[in-house]
Amino acid sequence: MSSPPDEQLLIRRAQAGDASAFEQLLGHYYDLMFRFAFRWSGQRSDAEDITQNACLKLARSIGQFRFESAFSSWLYRLVINCAKDWYKSQGHARDAQPLDAVPEALCDDASHIPVYLRQVLQQLETLADGFKETALLVHGEGLSHAEAASILNIKEATVSWRLHEIRKYLQTLQSCEGVNL
Image 1 (cartoon, one colour):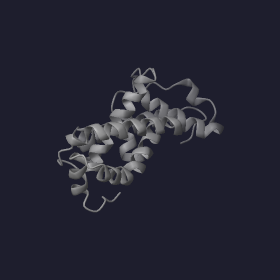
Image 2: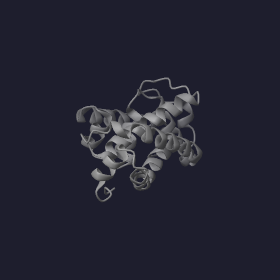
Image 3: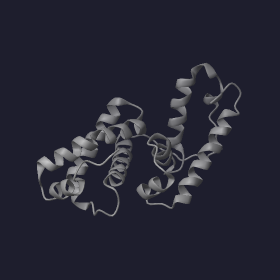
């Protein structure tokens, strides 16, 4: 996604309380925010709620942006935090499971591939903290390992390791009888 013209000026104006500048920034980045929230949640209504919360949080916290990274990187982090907060507020349990734990339900019928893919995304939610957003940023958003690392405030090697572990996990799922990725 390209930055809006004079993005830095728009951000500074929005930080100073200029509602028109904030509206322009939001207009430019809303689709990115919604798309990421949708990939996170998998449900349109949930993504709408997450995005609405992210817009409110952006309005309250835009003054905290310090121009140390790309605005879009900072915004991804904001949406991730809103998605996690929303997830908790909805009472979803998120018990981390080992990467080699393969649910039996994923191994029984390859004719339900769309259901299977949704289950894989849901399974990412049960992995240790950080795996889901790493996968979504790199594979869903097409960001580089370095960009994802910057957003997640981790080392690039950690991004690579997480993706490696996810691939190993998916290979374990693939080895289940009747499942082809």
